[in-house]
Length: 118
Image (tube, rainbow, N blue to C red; front, side):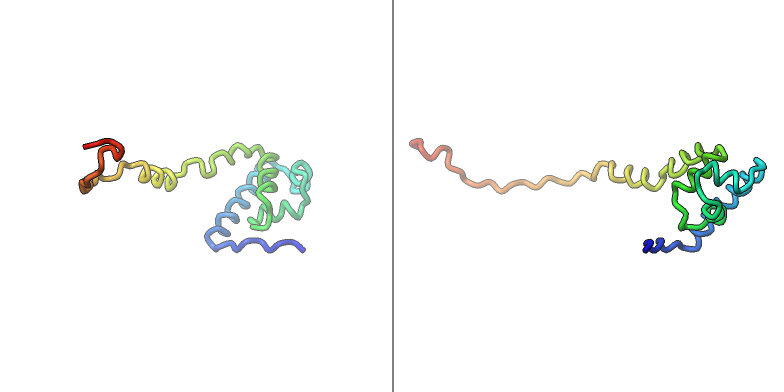
């Protein structure tokens, strides 16, 4: 029994649908049929339909294979390349903490050397 795919929120689904549409347009611009792209990608036509529809159940590998057939696999390098939020968090963690006043230790009388005579 296949595992249930993760919940996809509407904004994420919209992004996947837009990606699928762009891949479909790229295929059509190259005048490639869905059968040819599916064969070259080593996937079924059904899987290609899922990718072009932005189906969240299609694997990342399937999307990548379709992109490779279309000559767009290099675009994958741009994903998450500029992690602005992560860099900001990292920079905040690297900032020097504000100088705190040092607490003085209470002086206690310590024996100089317990074995020696005073």
